[in-house]
Length: 318
Length: 304
Image (cartoon, rainbow over all chains, first blue to last red; front, side):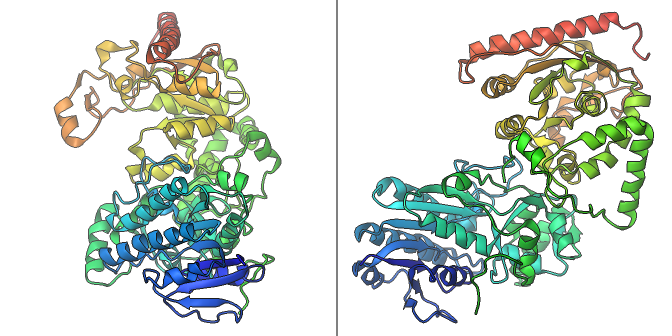
C-alpha cells in the first residue's frame, strides 16, 4: 500500500522536529546517513547516504506516497565539491526515483537565501524574483542549483505534485543553523549604521508548512514566512544581547581573517544579511496552502533561547 | 508578511507594547527631540500625530520598517526648517486625496530639501495627516546610518514592486520623475523641467492611482549651482558635484511655496507602447511646468 511519507535528512535538528509531529498522523520513514537520536519506535529509518544506489530500493518497494526532501546540507567548512555532490546529485537521484516509482507528492525544502540579501531588493520578494543569492556568496551555488532543479522537475513531471518551500531564517530551540547560532551569541557583531528588517520563522511553523504541502492539490513554489518582520536591532534587544558595532568596511576583511584562521564559524559573505534586506512576501502560501504561522513574533524570536512557545500545539516531547 | 489592505490594518490594530526606547544618551536625545516636535506644533500637531495609522507589529514597526515613535522625534529639525527657515507656504493642498495617490513634483536645490518639505506638509497640513513615502535611490541602502534612518521614517527603496505594494495599501507616494537630473542641474536651467522618467505613469495606470502635480517654488534658489564638476563626481562616485557659492550646498533661507494641482486621472494600459506613455507623461510635465511658471511669476521676492 502507498501510505508512507519518506523524509530525507530526517536525523537533522529540523528533520527530527518534523518527523515527531508528522508520525502521529502519517506513516513516516526516514533516510539519513546519520543515526536518529530518540527515534520513535514505529518509524523506519534507512541509514544510507542519499547518493548510494541502494536508495532506489527504498522507493522500489512502492510504499512511498510522498517524499519530503530536506537532505540539503550547508556546512561552510566543507568543500564545494562535497556540497555539490551531496546536495545536487543527491537531490537529482531521489527526485528521479520519486518520478520513476510513482510517488505522488514531492516537497523540497529550499530557503529564501536563494534570493540573497541585496541593497536593491524589493522589501517583499515574491516567488518569481531572480535567484541571485550566489552572486556575492559563490559557496551557496549548489543551494540555488537544487532549487532550480526542483523547479525544472515541476515541468518535467507534471504527474508528481511538487512543492518547493522557501522559508525565511529558521530558528527554534532545536535548530543549529547560521542565523540561530548568530542570535545565540552574547555579543554578536552588527554592522555600524545598518539595521535591516529581518524575518524569522519558528521551526514548528516550518514543520507545519511542510505538513500542509502534503495535502493533495498543493503544488508550486512558496515563500514561507513567520509572524512578521522587525529590525535586527529589535531582535537583539529582545534577546538581551550586547551587539558590537563594527564599521562595514572593516568587518569584511576582519572576518575574512578570522575565517581563514578558523576562529569563527561564520563565512564572511553572511555579513550581507546584517546589512541588506532579504525579506519576502509569504501571502501566496497563505492563500494556496492555508499556511499561517502559529507562533507570535516574540515567541519566534525568543525560541532561540530554548523556550518553547506557550500555548502552541507542541509535538516535540522527548 | 505582506502589507494588508488599509481598512483591515486599522481594524486589526495590534496591541501596542510599551515602545522600548533605547536607553542612555540616545534615548534621552530621542525624548528631547520628541518634545521639540510637540513644542513646535502644539496641541494641533499632537492631535494630528495621534491620527497617524501604520500597521504596526508588537515592536512598533510597520512591514516596511517605519517606526512612528522614532519618526515623531526625527521630524523635529525638519519641522523647524519648515516653519522658520523656509517658511513654507502651501496652496491647494486640499487637492491631495485621502488614500492612494502619486505626488509628482519638480526636483531642485542640490540636496533634496524639497522632498523633506513636501513630506512635512503631508504631516502637518494635509487631510488626513499621513507619512508620505518618497521612493529613495537604490544606493541609499548601502549608506551606513542613512539606510536605517530612511527606513524608520518610512522612506522605501524605489523599486516598482515596492511602489505597487504601498499604493495597494492606500499610501501616498512622492516621486520626482526628473531624479538627479533635476536635483543637480545648474542655475541657468532653473525652473525648467528636465526629462521625466516613465515609471510613475506605468505605476499610476496599473494601480489606478490619481496623480497630483506639485510645483515647488523656491528650492531652485536655495543652493544655486554655477558649475557641475563632472570629472570629480565621476571619481568620487557621486551623481554630480555641484559648485555653489556656499561651497557645500547648504540651503539659503529662501521662501518655499508648494503648489498642489488638481488630481489627474489617466486611463489605459501600463503595457502600452512607450510613445503612448510619453504622451501622458508630457501632459503631467506640462501641468507641473505651468504651475511652476505661474508660481515664479506670482512671487514678489525670493526670500520673502
